Image (cartoon, rainbow, N blue to C red; front, side, top):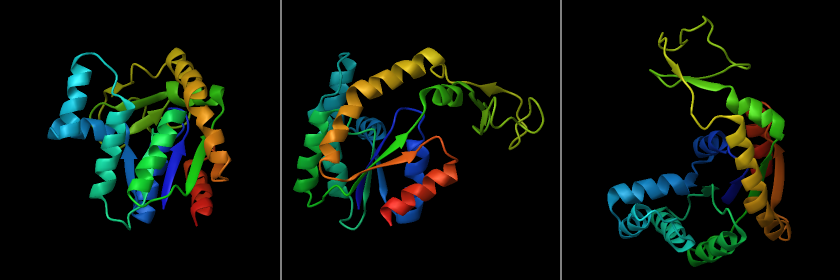
Length: 214
């Protein structure tokens, strides 16, 4: 089973992908993670990507496609793939079709986590983590039981990501709508698109995705 998880940053793709990995034994293919790993391992594709990034350029679709091809080749035929963060454009969607065909795979489902922009802004801008153990909290939804003290490790230092601010979130939402949403018609024409309420409770989102896949 090969699926794409779509949704803007903060929609919960990473959380749901990990749950799919645990439940179905699938492999999460995050292009950002793969790129960093390839650069670190100094694979041929990684060396090529590093030279582009060192020169201040953007990694091309061809390099990303090669990364995905390498990962699929290394996976067993019985292991499903979850594409997280790819494809982002219509051109990449067609590239993915070619890559999957080359490896004897087909795309089974495209699942979009549907979110409300204002609610997503609240969700993201309220996030903070323990600086010691990394446990996540939220201004509105999950405060430490004791103010200023981490529930898990007792740490008293907390941090926020600098990009967890309203302007950045709305910019990312606009970019998602402009660049990624147009690929949906490609998959809707194949009748493989499903939408899930990404603002629901995490367990409810997981259950909804499970109903689609099962």
